[in-house]
Length: 112
Image (tube, rainbow, N blue to C red; front, side, top):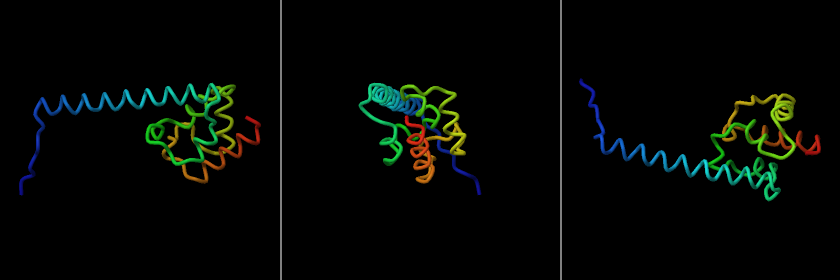
């Protein structure tokens, strides 16, 4: 039995690429706003981590999210994740509830 292959026309492929670009730009814009909100203190990382994972943050790494906060750079963020035994390359969307609580507890323990 032969498999049926459905091939999109060039116009359909172009439209799919354009839709993907629009979506990617929306995600980047929202992430940039979250970065500004964290930096300015309008949001705190504990609220973000303890709430349900937002679609626009699901693909961001936990290391990046930690580094978006004031006074926390790569070394400090890595230390937090090392203590929590969580890979820095883990995405926010892939974190379990327990891992989220452990990170928040470690951040509170460190007073940041």
